[in-house]
Length: 446
Image: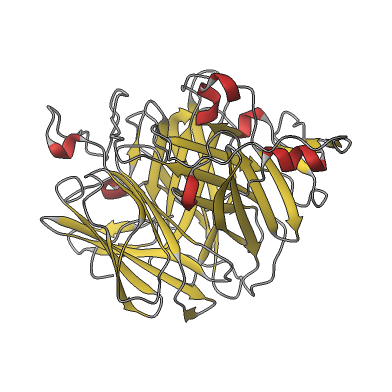
């Protein structure tokens, strides 16, 4: 690979609270290892509840939510409530929704809805991503997200490499930031690149942790100005999406907030009812900008498809401060050549310092255990509730899933080791680069 490239990004399906009441609420309880016990289902509501009005104005503060669904194939149409330690959201800091929970509904084979209470945003604003969990060759991506009452409903699908819908465990994350939001790094040693250096301080423009997202809904257009986006530089700063060729796009992040940045993380999802998947391909670092490249494919065929991109640097993947996080990229640079290669098989190595970050100021590590299988350790950041997102990187045809991750306790932060499994377009385990993001919401007020 001639130039160093960036990292890119997985989601959950949501149904209205009124709809949940109408079909009955299924509650899933979890054993100590995080696996669900038998879930009970309640009777249908005896009367139709008064519909909750859908919000018409965007929230004035950031809203977000994440969830892990550990039931592969729950009963169709039944709302399930994952355990408290596998979900969190901004609703938990609001008096009226503090006791609410996210719910998951399986609506068909490989089709899921996730309902995040109290975080509804009109007009499909914000972005949602999802990642499959498990050892099988399955990938998941978000289709739509829209408010239903005061909740945000995210739909997602999971498929085999052949494009067949399959049931799967998954993680999903939804995030929205108003134009006025500015993130901050308030944790000690909030940024780490493996060189013991921190970002500039003292109010300079590039001391604000870069955070952005966008959605491309016109993938066949030569040039698109993103309409659904957040940009830390400000609401008037353009985010232009250029179509280089079929299924091949570039996005310019302009300004000192993005130029010459290291330690950032990218997550990308195809969106809509499509068998395509999208991956970050790489990036160029220029004096005044950072250009990110995205590629989308069905099998081995490059394909135009809508997608979302979520970018964070010195910050977690959600618009909330004091969130523990770890970011890593699997590739290793051959010193002084610019060439990026696989980590050595069977050895534990430090994650490439150019694209690693830790809120604990620790060194993240990568171990290449076998073909297409990796273990990434984030020291001292793990506490539940937590979330993991992953995306293959470097070319558009491979897919990566979360094999699993260690379950840290609710007390002192501990090490988190995430297993990643990657496959080629035929579903065989295959080496590829990937971008991985971990976050813990344990320190947030509730």
